Image (cartoon, rainbow, N blue to C red; front, top):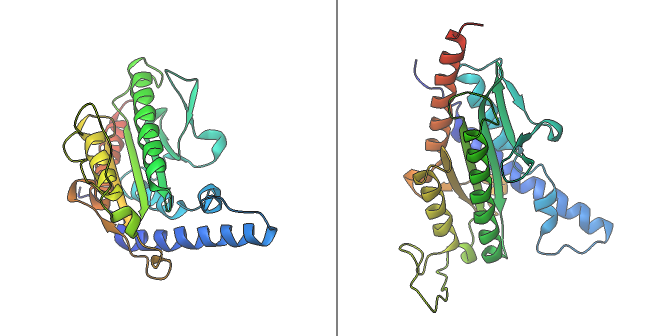
Length: 250
């Protein structure tokens, strides 16, 4: 059976338009209330800006053999047990017949503070993955094959995110790839290495300008971290788990 990528390109454009319009609505609401927005935080904390990508993930899961899976979206049922902490809240969880099929994080970042936010996102991604796989190793999710762990990042495409960044490392040189790299290039490298080190099944980063509020424009940074690869990896895992679980005795 071939994989169904659920018309992901068109749905991604819709998701990007929704991302920017939701941010704008949150900022207008805050401005009307008379509260000062620090660093455009209103759009980040609105909680709905990645809903279009959530819908895309759900469509991919439904289209590849798990139409009857439990796809958890509400905050009350999005936690998994951890190893270094009691629980971790995810953005999407998929379970079927008592098996954890997938856990996905959907993140975003816009300017102007790309530096601090990149470091925070990187540390969060590393900590989440380390806790998740250690909990899995220790049987927190029961006896089952490795679930799909996904990390998808949407970043504003702006001069500040594309400009070369100079870092100071007075004692030892920077690791290969980071010297003079922009923040978008750093996200690309981060995603590549998260997958290379087995911390995520797939990781993607997309760049989108503010003008995409009308066009839905977004771009991959490399084939290794593109949206198609992410969607295909999720679809493949879901199809394999659907075949395995439906063939298993009750």
